[in-house]
Image (tube, rainbow, N blue to C red; front, side, top):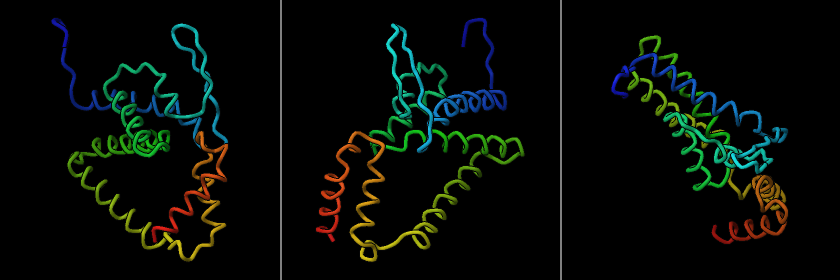
Length: 176
């Protein structure tokens, strides 16, 4: 708050936050997936980086807006915890916020929206576990190797994916 400034609150601030978050998500959205586009980033001293990795793109951004900064931090936490999925988590969070904002405009209380998101998360996990998961005993080694290679294909390990995939499957099967 500036000495002669005004304080903004309510729907105007929410809209500004959603706009800032959407701008960050739109920057990385086109780099998602196997046909994702590369981005050419030029920093303040002229160094050029070409990448389609969401974490790298977001680290290079100089984000000022508080809500957008939280989205960048969310991406960093995803990268530290899992090592992948940074673009997906930014896009998903952005879309959830957009839809929550629409619900607030329809006079739903934010606490009710959060409760709904938590319930939806529990139900989604339950559905995945009951309908889409398979026991590894039912899968052959070749299927497990292909799954391991696919999950490592976008990172540095991709070059040696055969070696690491076999190591991973051996470790997984020995734990049973």
